[in-house]
Amino acid sequence: MRGGYFIGNVSPARMDFRWFALGNCIAILSSLATPEQASAVMDLIEARWEELVGEMPLKICYPAIESHEWQIVTGCDPKNTRWSYHNGGSWPVLLWMLTAACIKTGRIQIARRAIDLAESRLLKDSWPEYYDGKLGRYIGKQARKYQTWSIAGYLVAKMMLEDPSNLGMISLEEDKQMKHVIRRSSSWTC
Image (tube, rainbow, N blue to C red; front, side, top):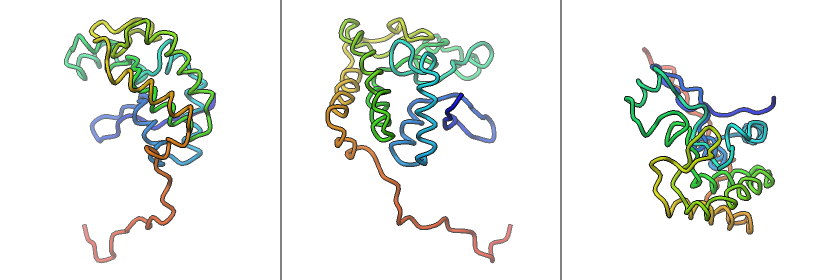
């Protein structure tokens, strides 16, 4: 399988190797990701569509945590059970970031597919905040309806797809004039 992604959390105490949609899309939009890395993220989304997108764009993270790890990380929060809310739930607001990342990487077909999927349900489902389930099939058990950010995520995605030049408002190009990393001086002792 092709693809790759930036892991979710790197710290001395805990490495979180899960996929986080928001971080990967921001890495692409900010040019933190190289063109090759950005392409690998898009390859992964295409290859793992059922897991990362499912029936409603877009999974906030994948996979969901469960069992003992869920108890430790969430404090047994009933809202964050597996495949719900911030633990693998699907958030329509992320549609605009996915679309922007798709435009930046030249992968418009991914954005179109995700928007078509969202269009088939969002209005009918009354614009919920998030969806539950491994595939994002169910309206979130505690989701509020008529959420402005769900509506805005969809509208911004549509507007960017209709006029990709709008990407310039939110995307940064790599700074070719950036200075090299400053190294410690030779007098630094430790």
